Image 1 (cartoon, rainbow, N blue to C red):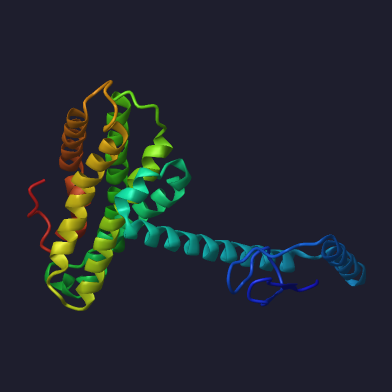
Image 2: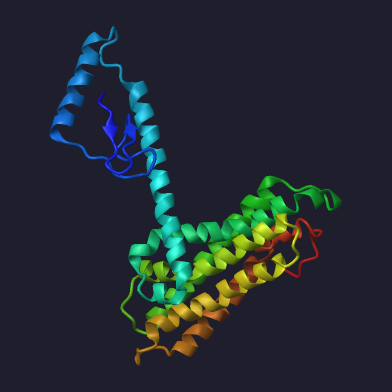
Length: 270
């Protein structure tokens, strides 16, 4: 099989459509395809087992997945940096094209808090009784994903009640973009935990309060500020807050279980 040289960094690649080093899409010409096909046919003819190409196929598929993962990671990092420069300005132009990035942000956002308490305070768990991985990390993570998804849904309903012609994917893309700064706040808190800097608590509070109260209000106002029909922006925001408080109360024990496991279960007011 012919090697593919990357047109950007000139790295020689054995398999895949993307460069292993820089992620650039590799060119495929007719001559190259023909030579590659001829090479494979020759290999099949000389093989004592006929068309046994499963091993190379599995390797190629694995490398393709790895290359795609690297490519997606680079794209998301670029998106994250662009949003952090001017969050609201970026979000105002964001829509369904940022739906996937919005979902990735929600997953990162939902994972960081349980990680802070599971990894950052795991050494103190013996004082209160050890908890399982499921109790300390996985279940809170799922709870935060569900909770954040519900808040995003309430925001979408408030926008629709204002009679704005918008899809769920549009709202999700904008919601995810505005969630980026507060996700960054959680990531800073995560780093400060290991540096034993007590200010991490303020970054956690800023991230959680901002994500619950600031993001929905900004998303709703960005769609309804020039709209004079339907539900008023203020009432739509209040409705979102009320539904969020109800959800927070009902799901509070699950959402805060990662904290409760390290401060003595049963002390939470939920």
